[in-house]
Picture 1 (cartoon, helix red, strand yellow):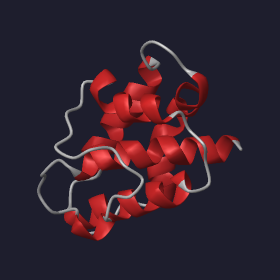
Picture 2 (tube, one colour):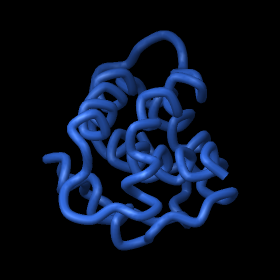
Picture 3 (cartoon, rainbow, N blue to C red):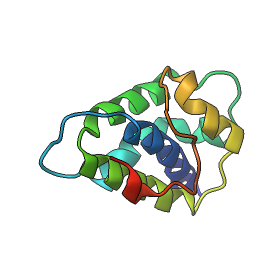
Length: 119
């Protein structure tokens, strides 16, 4: 169940990363890297209140910096979407996470996002 919570957090963070435009890199980010960066957010997304822990926002920022190419963003999105399907996070906390970590998203946080359309 713990890895499931992490996956949901990763999903919403991936949406944030996928919405930013950054120069292209050569290889896609690995799912294990995506999940590693977002691990500190799991408890917060399951039952948190107030602001997310500093380590969570640091992971969000790290993931945002790592997902630079279109391939990275699509891979991160797919990883997070897959993980989110196995979890039951607090939807309100997940939707608010990007803004609480100081990240602005041009798209709504949604488990129905089409990862193939992220560029």
